[in-house]
Image (cartoon, rainbow, N blue to C red; front, side, top):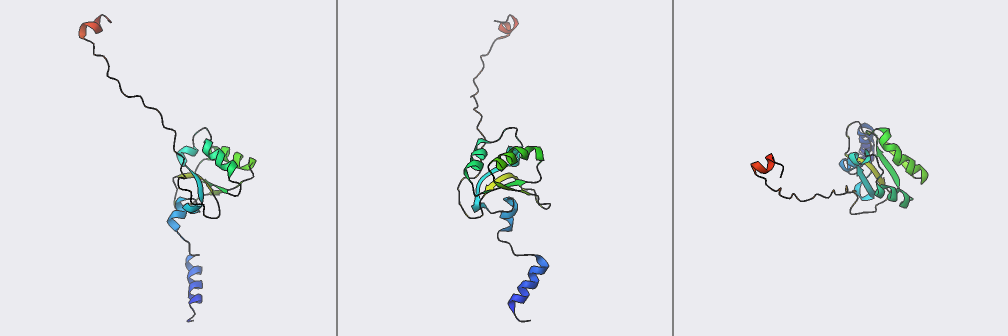
Length: 145
């Protein structure tokens, strides 16, 4: 009974296997940040068009796996599943009943790649600077001049 391995074995049986970085694994759909090549947020996945960066990442990362958030509607995920099937990429639907990650889609390896920028930035909408409107007097408005 003094064997520490027996105690570890009992603890594992009661509480489950020890997991490294559990918060990070919840956020990144069961994997960890250092393995991720590309990440799309839920609102990005639910858009009508496929992100060009996601399509390129699916085509360019042959040994990677596609992780999809199971809380999203299948109609949003189907376009990415179709791409993954065309490229023979494995995929996994991840549904965590205790936590709904803001991430909708991940492309990740089973080893570390340490890519610095994994998030796809939404295209910036050009905003025109506000130009002051020409002030018109009362009579100009009245006579449309």
